Image (cartoon, rainbow, N blue to C red; front, side, top):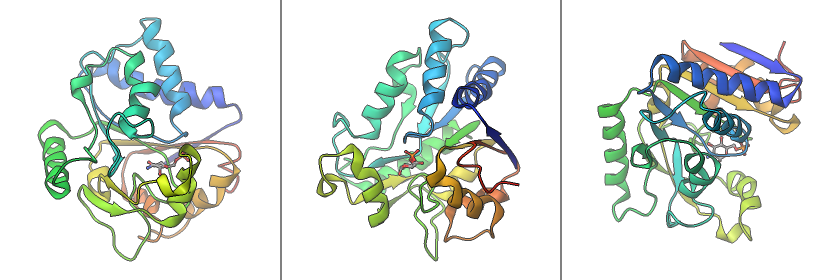
Length: 242
Ligand code: GLP
């Protein structure tokens, strides 16, 4: 596990973007695993700037997102499809047809999960999976519990997760109660994982995830089993890292 702490946001963003662009330079057809949330946004901005300066191209790459809310149409402003289009895809040269996000509005959600997992098996493995971390240690939407699911599945969102995400909706009642998420097994199949966390509010969960025991009660702690994880933290989120 390679944990790096940055004094300046800009340096964290440049380093994160650099890991992604180095991959694309050596492997233009790379399969990227992408994440929503505020943590990767600065890195996405940096990538957009690099594409606009012709320093990197996503033209041959493809991407799989971690998760999507159930019940929001793709065009809803808070769907993860809208987020990715606005924060990244519409500003880079990626082929939108090769950007995969689970369909949270599919008529048969179980079948959608199976199809997503199968597509990942056919086109993967993911070369580089970007991750944020929830306040409770969730990765994707794999919520803490006594058991975790390996494959892509439908999950009931914890109240604390709905509250944390309510800031993007008019009220908490509008936050979906379910999501489709890659499973922990799906995530761990990626060749390399890049986790990003920022801010004091993530310091304690970062300590638990990377300095505590491996437990399903903190899904991110399972990343300790992966051979190639890079963690980029700002000084506040890395407060307890020795
Ligand atoms: C959401 C996403 C996660 C993300 C988490 C943290 O719940 N499903 O993939 O990591 O939020 O978000 P943020 O980066 O905004 O703290």
